Image (tube, rainbow, N blue to C red; front, side, top):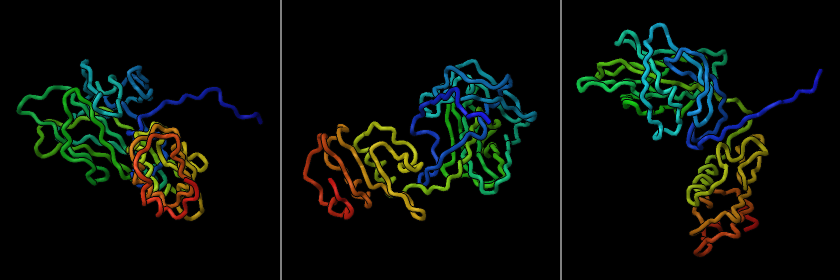
Length: 297
């Protein structure tokens, strides 16, 4: 047997605000499907894709493909699907029918997150309305969706879709008189892990600290996970039965200004806090006395 090796590795930075999941449980995601709806000429990547994703074509025999040569404005949408992907889409051939697609897996506990991309590819007449509802297994996810002409928008679930059978239906609403449209979809599967997510109050605290001080660090995902790869400037304690806790926070020389953030008081397992070499003002707050495990400040 030979020695395994890797001949290349490419990484792409992502905006920390996209591909959101359950806010109380940070989870790793693995791509399941990424589909360019209405496109039929093979998988591809595009120079206009800020995240260099590979898109696969998809169209159903019961759907009509649409295309426009006009540019689609994605500036207001953080997911920033490439222009070429958003310029295509599909509607049901029978205007009263739904756009439907499904997938199955063997694991009944499998969890999925979907990201649906919409943009109208025509300017509707004044007496026309394109509005639709999106459901999963007959449960409504999004209601009264009205895509704008030549403007991209992305809809996604914040709670996982759990099960081994999944069907997404996009059906026009009662007030609509033109069929629904879909331009692209991404489906991600939750990567199972035996590790527990970081204690939720600790997560909220460091996120508030990051917002308060506008901290420019790679603070994305779970602060303490995976184990031994905690966020820059943090250390965590780990046990087999309880969520990890943040016990060390180093914000030294981070250009912090203003008063000491009240959110620090919620890091109740904190043992070491380093705020040196910053421009903080005001008195040392009383709430630090409540951090009973704090040994070094």
